[in-house]
Length: 75
Image 1 (tube, rainbow, N blue to C red):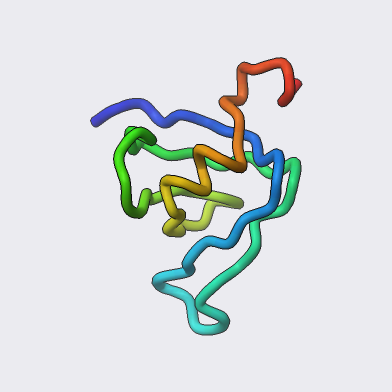
Image 2 (cartoon, one colour):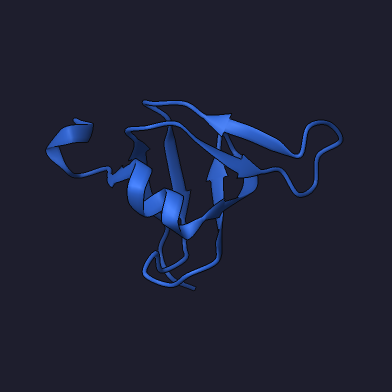
């Protein structure tokens, strides 16, 4: 199993809550830290974790609205 990669959110985006009673979508705010074991270069949805909760995010949103945690924009 690949190691989890962490990203910081630099612009808000919506994710899908697949296993929660309540709203199916939630917005991940700027400054949040998400992590995934998925490779971000493919189209479709990625399983992510935010606040220790499993969610689904569009790969495009991760590419466009986050930076890898080790980049200066996230420090």
